[in-house]
Image 1 (cartoon, one colour):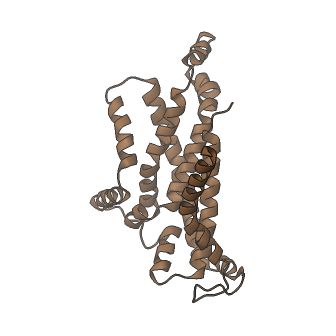
Image 2 (spheres, one colour; image 1 turned 60 degrees about the horizontal axis):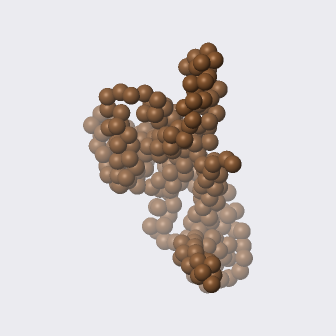
Image 3 (cartoon, rainbow, N blue to C red; image 1 turned 180 degrees about the vertical axis):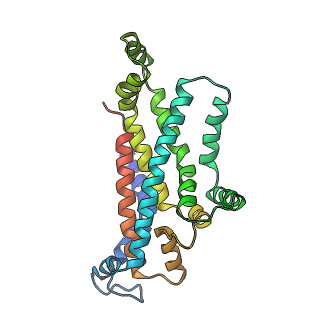
Length: 255
């Protein structure tokens, strides 16, 4: 009886969370353009997506910025996590606290503060400003993820390697990097998802010459809900789901 109640409770939670997404995906296959009534199954809206040049360009921009910012955030976040874990220096605890503050800060605050900074230094809004903004957004998530992995290390492994004559590079190359790689990859996929889905920070930090997919979707929805938007969101849900599942698989401890 207890297991049945738990199952029903979990089913209701998932139903509440995923019903809107399921409805949107279902209507992306609806043949009707102007009403919510079901007029039959069609792939026409997905075909239109493939032939929309401006939409494809926005999608390519999003993939490019997400890939570049996730890679840069992984490098900076991993180095930050290693510094916090391995060395004792002034400001170490402050840096660790700042990472959590950045994670907890509202996106609109981050977006406006970065916009003020870019305006103060007269940096034109476009690819590079959005790239720096997304790196700023993603670095704390990578650093915390990698740092959590480093805390689970057995320090005697590194000590044994040093006793056997391994230098700093050999320890990093053959011990630390392989052991942290699942967390690094998980941080990369997490950063990729955050960058790909971001609307608020991108709204403040990108310019009219560099349009990305989330802002394109936002502008399309403001003019009315179109079937192409449902199809586009369904594709983004699929990409996000693959990234999240991959991240969770990498974070899962190996038996």
